[in-house]
Length: 430
Ligand SMILES: O=P(O)(O)OC[C@H]1O[C@H](O)[C@H](O)[C@@H](O)[C@@H]1O
Image 1: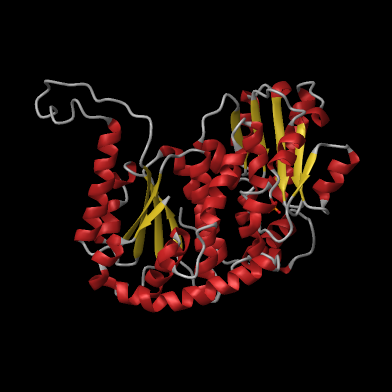
Image 2: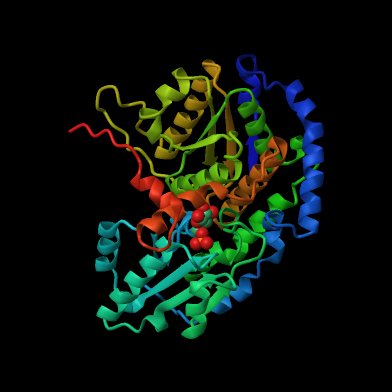
């Protein structure tokens, strides 16, 4: 994996993040790296996430799921970091096992999925670090009822990944369900390289060892200079640009297989860095599709965006047939991959021509190793950014207000937040 900052330097006159600015920032990167390494060595909360390539035991994961031989489908019931990491992996990789995610409580979507499944050959993978998340527990109760209605013993088809306490752990213990622990000191959005993200991938037959090898390769590149670490190069440039007004970061992979990765990145970046009135808003985009949807704004709208362009340099390809159709001869004889690459490079150059910064991230392939590199590098980039911005990267207190309000509205407790919902003013136009 490599990170190319060339476009940032080419557009430096428009935003000020020049080579000299990066040289000046590098001393702060060195200090941040030192803090990160001390946190990792001490197994401190959050920093422990960057130790996962060495602490996750893939054999234990494989052993725990081994009882489920040859499922037709895996339904992961979880939300946020308990679903998006696993989904990034299974949505990016091919498998004979269908992977689905119940990470919302939209009744029509839940019913549509359950009606489509052969529950007798489906594994239900329930994931919750806290074991108390309302959406996850509600969906699990619905899925369990559906299995009963289908004459399926839910205890035969359910796997649990959760913490040492909470409703889910109690349920797993009571019914002796196969389960895995979640690692201490690893927030959900940083947990893809642990049991949380890798159990579903293992159930789908993916090479989770290769995912960890890719992650370890990027861990080995962490250094006291942004110029020696792709992860730190990305984190430092994202921070420097945000400091100079690039308050948004459009994650735009040129690979359908990385579309879910953008959703995972959005949680990682938003929940980690959106603190104390600071942060960089992650936008989800897809190349080449969103050239025809978002590029107008990125190129000619407010000068407040970094665009992150991601691609694999090796992929399967499809030839474009030769044609005698007027005006289309230039397409014939090339390939869809050639066209995708041309669009990628044209978008990058188009942004540069308008003084808009972009960073190019290139993987060799979108395979388990490449995904491990990319996921680890983004996590390390995020941790570095948080150090440079002096925010508390590993907590997310702002999500609690809404949880208490929702719980109060459902009668789950006496919460003043629920009262605030009731008292909210309305201005309805019909
Ligand atoms: O894994 P769980 O405890 O169920 O939490 C699931 C998600 O919900 C929380 O509200 C946090 O915002 C996320 O960081 C977390 O990943």
